[in-house]
Length: 202
Image 1 (cartoon, rainbow, N blue to C red):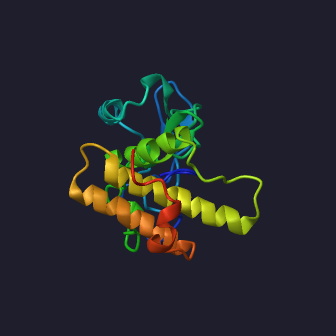
Image 2: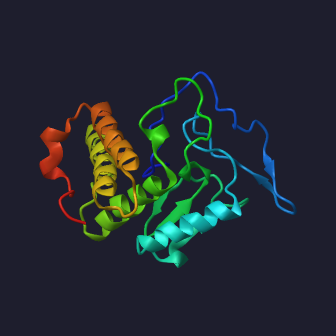
Image 3: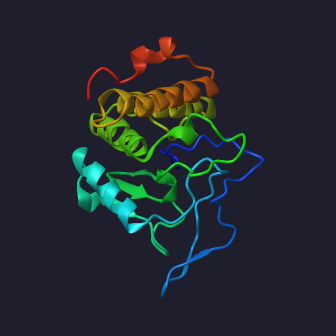
């Protein structure tokens, strides 16, 4: 939602969701699951088998190779947020919105669904990287990194809203709202930067 290239906006809240876990989750015969903390904005419960099947099914519709899907489990990417790692997609609990978000957490990011999150990562980040249209985020002045990060994330959400298959109008609207918020947080507006964004074709 997501980590460096994921969806989490980092907006804090006073109240945690009802499904927040205060103690480590135990898997039979496994080490503690170190949960992702999202300040109540995203899911923090372990993914079920059915949810994992749903994830792989939608990623297949996005033509993303199944061998490049890394689903976190105890001791295996369990401290990573959902997001792209080169040509691989790390999936963690925050791929889902919180089932019962706390008071004050209803940001644009909180409303991003499972499929919309996956579309943001694949149509938004992965395909843009392949096309050579991602914004550089390393070895640059802090103010440039801040601007480029906002542009890269907004571009990903707009692309997902425009081009991803099988998203409903609510999901597409939530992605567009996410893009606007990300730009606003960097003192940018869509109309001023749309010429820099790779959003006219998939």
